[in-house]
Image (cartoon, rainbow, N blue to C red; front, side, top):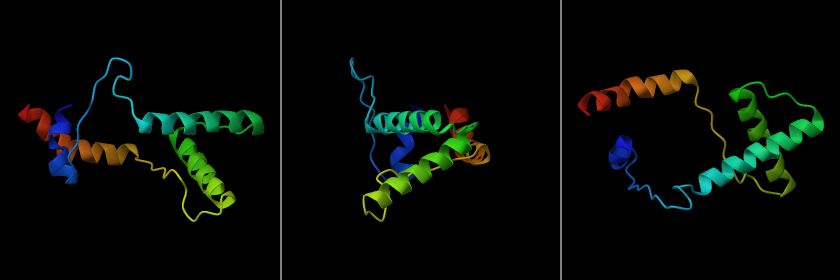
Length: 104
């Protein structure tokens, strides 16, 4: 929540987080994640593919989105999939979040 206060400074975009009784703030991102996960589950069970870590899931999802785009005669996938490794997350934590936590 504290980082939401800095969203405008960090990304030059206004942001808000809306809490509702029924949705608990869930948005399109949750639905996209659910589709990626259910697609991975169906495909891996059907084709006996093993995804053993987050990197495997990322590669699978990225390839699946590219294949779907090609089948639909599109140049770009409907969903862009990104991977942030632990080192990138730790760098952000050290360079940005730690100082904010100290100030808080």
